[in-house]
Amino acid sequence: MNLIELDHALRKLRLSGIADVLETRLRQAQTDRLPPIDLVSTLVSDELTRRQDRLFGRRIKLARFRDPERSLDSFDFGFNKKMNRALIYELATARFIGQREDALLLGPPGTGKSHLAQAIGRAAIQQGHRVVYREAHVLIEELADAALDGTRKQCLADLTAVPLLIVDDLGMRKLPHTAAEDLLELIMRRYERASTILTSNRPVEDWGKLLGDTAAVTALLDRLLHHAHVLKCGPRSWRTKVHTDLRQELFRRRIEAAINDLRPGIPAEQVSEALRKHFAAPRPEPAAWAQYRHTA
Image (cartoon, rainbow, N blue to C red; front, side):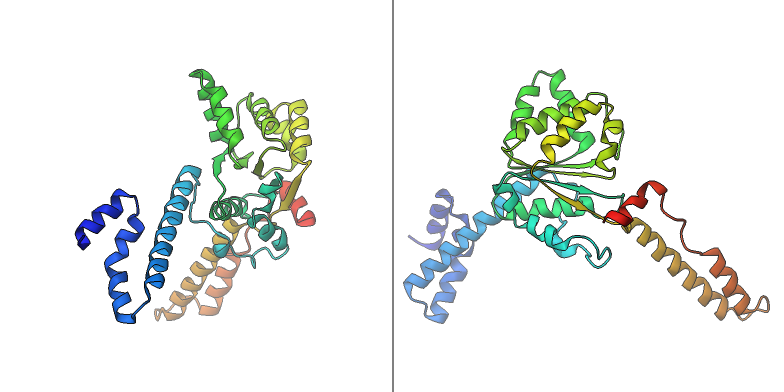
């Protein structure tokens, strides 16, 4: 059997990981005078790596993350130094999934809740778990559509079966009046059977008013908080940071332009002072977010 025939045979056996590198590995074996057992071991390792990579890619795609490249490596822990870093890394071990525990990530908009939720989901996939990610309004819309076409029972069964369900941005958009009951039913089905991560920019005390059904929300929180890890994110917002950085850069450029302008006019010192007043610190955050500064 020559190399071409061997390549066809390997692909027919669904050993494309070996087929892709066979010629290279044979040359390496000749050059390095590898023993046969080492060559076989290397080829098997190549095949396993290929299968793991493909499985990881499929599960990332099936999860439907909004930002699939989010990871803990790209998260700036120095920006909000009071965040519970130990808890974040503990969640990234995915042990809470094996123990069927839940997690709540709470804090003002722009404090990294969605980034962390998706990073933890990505870490869970790397460790072999199936994950489903949905923004809260998308999840409720899917359940509503399933009710209309008669597939709601199957939709709930699929959402119940996944080891980790991430519901992101509860409170970011207005939800229909059925949202509280839908979420309650889903959480009840998953309670002590699977793990859920839920993020929200609203404190849990506001959820009754937010969802318009205090009784359903009370029952939901009773189950969700029973075995839950609560991470308070913030208080500083990434979006405010970006806005501040842009203002500072624009201020710097205008100062340089004023200094380099040789035309007669207002003295540079006077221009600088005027610009400093114009680019004063951003307005304070809304009072509704103030509580996070004391509880984070």
